[in-house]
Image (tube, rainbow, N blue to C red; front, side, top):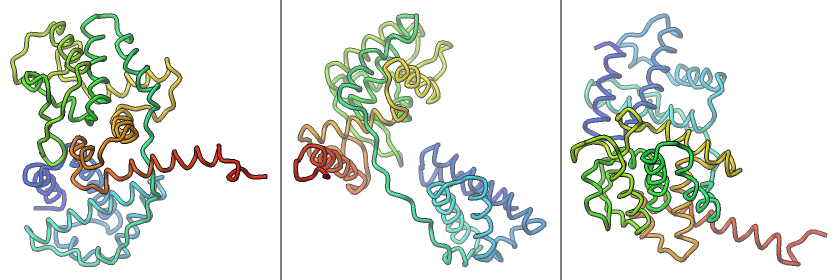
Length: 303
């Protein structure tokens, strides 16, 4: 196989064997395609054998090229992670070693905290979510979708991958998350009511295995639609640009934590593999409290 065919075999391995999310596989595929295209031009051609001859200087040249194109530290770190995954696959399955990749350090990625909505902002979002469409069933769909993201802390990909059968157990929702890991998420009565209202009004006759959220043409609803919906909602309500579908998930975790929720329980509800991923919400809450202290405590005020 040539380098492009090796990359395709690796992506199939990531999807079928490693069970990475489609978004991750697509992003890694884009990074690998950019890498192979750059190396083919950089070296005047690229063969299977050439992969094993790549040097640290070659890889640094690629990263410098991507940085010059405007890719930031986070994007470069992801590209390097993709290359390392590709190299591991080549080593284990094709006896091709890109040894000097180990000499490349990942760029430092600045720490960033989630940007949740305020409790009032989240409440207003759910209140007005169903006002952006004319058809009653579309209004019910939009309200159900955003209520599910905030009320259950789902990723948008998880919500859009739900099937009609998944709503039969009204008290809880069976969710397939990253790595095909399954978890059960309890549903508040408001979420149950909005899901039931949408299912009742949806004009498309579908079987139990059909997608839950459908477009006006009866096709699976896209993540892009959810993003555009939030753009419209935040413009109407004057919310910040950070008010995205994923911000509703951040808001769920932050508000539960602020209300005394247990960190381990939040980890389970979000489907995080590691507690360290969930702990960023603790940092967010501490940052908020420190900001309040700085603004309010007399001794904290600068003269």
